[in-house]
Length: 359
Image (cartoon, rainbow, N blue to C red; front, side, top):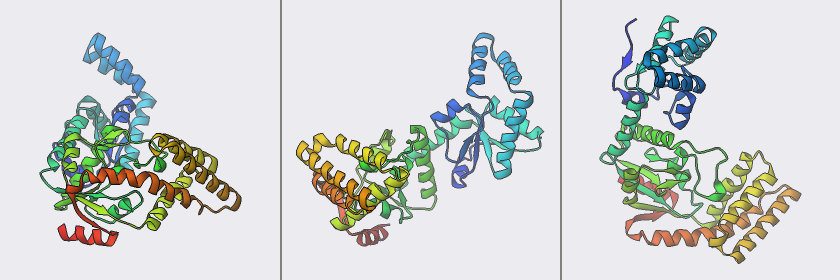
């Protein structure tokens, strides 16, 4: 067959959420790949290491020969089978290696010989990654940001999910800003986070949206960093402050810190309790010893109540204490320094109406 490639139509890959076969070695994939990509390597980490040594000693031709020797017979059949199975499930799939060179070309040829034609990305991972990074850099010329702020528990994330023109950076980073709302699954790699952000921006901006709304995050989300120029752009954006009464905030926080969190710990109350106490330990210095001790006592009483009665309602007491004594003063202090950026304050309904008006 004639060699099938895709030149530089990376935008359509993003807009169509095209499934991708990453034929690089697992160690490369773990450092970062693209949304909707699955790692079905041509050579595994051990084989890659051996081929690399051969290349340094004897050059490219001998390294290629060794590669064909290592990936032959049953091993070759299994790898072609994995690619073909993926193609059966995803007819529009494409494949790539690091630079769109030998590995993806060999994979494409082997698939063709087995009767499955697949397009490979010209320039491979390197070219597509460059395209996505440029998309983040250039996005600041294509939209105006609005930043959604508000005290802990006011429902910012809930509101964001209702808006077509929002991007949830915490969700992309698989992180919740609070020590008490941490996720039990690890964060993605920095590269995966940036690539996912680029996908979101390209898809949103293709709809012609002029304003994009983000939660007030700052430059760092857990262990990950928002790309510098993009983060700087967001920091200068107008602030919209979501307000909610304390009772509503307690309910929202209770749902996240207690009900949902306990599910993540498979309702293992002891394990969840230790995690919460550890989180309380991390804020002891800022909270102060006396208030920290009081908070811990309220929490332990709530755990005892849940253990004996089965009701988790008592947890709302320590949550209210945490919001009023810890989070609110800290947030109010920070927001005062950015008072000039505040353009609107209101309830969820009022904020939604305001955002629709300006968008």
